[in-house]
Length: 224
Image 1 (cartoon, helix red, strand yellow):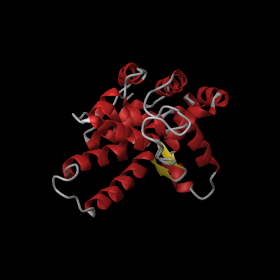
Image 2 (tube, one colour):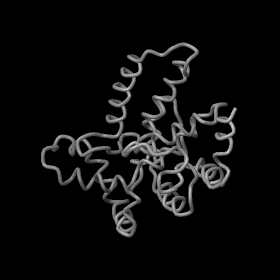
Image 3 (cartoon, one colour):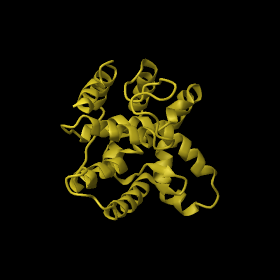
Image 4 (spheres, rainbow, N blue to C red):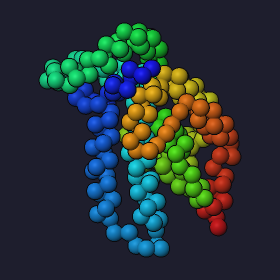
């Protein structure tokens, strides 16, 4: 739908997702530039910059679902000191409320976990990253998955819950999120970054991360 090019997803009650990610990009790029990276003792600067860039633009990927948008739109509408922002976003608010709100509300009421946003991006980031070191993709995955909490043990947490492998209940929730993910609007954010994502990658995620052996290559690499 070409008219969507002029609409933006919302991240906070006073800012768009594009604005939020752009600010994160600026701050994190400055922070990385301040680090002293010892040559040949760690990953090279170009690789770290690539990973930083992907962390920025996929950590809030899940905010693109109708479920999160419903949650944040309700917060935006109830806020009283953001009149200018609401005016700027009025076309999108009308579009969402008219065509998406009722269905999203009904499904979210049944399962409020559908508005959680961290986990979806932790897997879709891998559509833009491959490396011969099998640990690196999992580092991206883990950081995004836990970016609203504490980092847990790498493969399983203290309660033995998988942190990389996807269990059936997670696949069901993520599958619903994918169905209600606004890929076109999110791609508008990614286009200037020369990144791309689409719904088809979900089939690859399910196939790879539902396997019991998904972390075996990483373990083998660590043993070398």
